[in-house]
Length: 121
Length: 111
Image 1 (cartoon, rainbow over the protein chains, first blue to last red):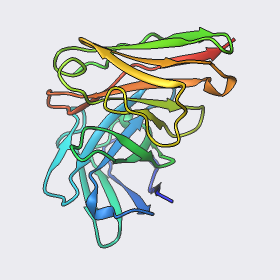
Image 2: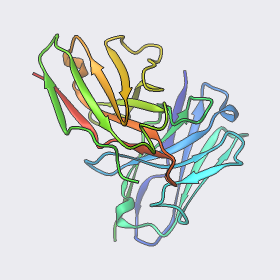
Image 3: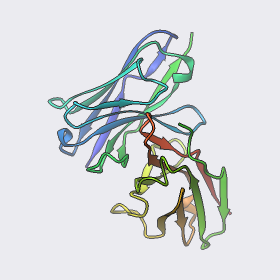
Image 4: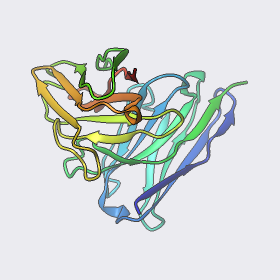
């Protein structure tokens, strides 16, 4: 079955960096755009970044542009999120999600189980 | 880009129908037919319930339906069941620099 599994979360000090990974299985990874979406504790969902199936196009939310970098390795069926200059407000559960629409319309399906990032000194 | 506006909570009795609204602008909900809805149970990842305004993925109950009028999208749950108790979020593609925006979320309670 289609599955996404995130890893790499943890506790990190403000200003430091962290890399999240999302391992995919059960579908042709190289055919789909992929997203990162985050959810701060007790809060709503916030879109973070998207990468096209061929890694050519990458887009970011205003809140992370210039600090976060999305990438993928289609040979390893893995999506990444490199986070730098982390702030307390970046603390959240980070989900990866496949965009199941041809138009990359933001049809997030499925989602991984999430990985928790806590930015704290 | 501000979040789309949803009511904080909606409740109903088993068997009733409820509707959750999602209000945006002509730059997002009103400008594109790329509105989707997600169900999130406590401690779980969101699950796609409706996409492209009114399309339902395979496996999602036909008790869930979506529609749009102007800048407001709606999710209707008919024949409300205890298992429908969860948080629901809308999302939309947007012409702003942040390409996708979520709603503020609605907690559905089955009385």
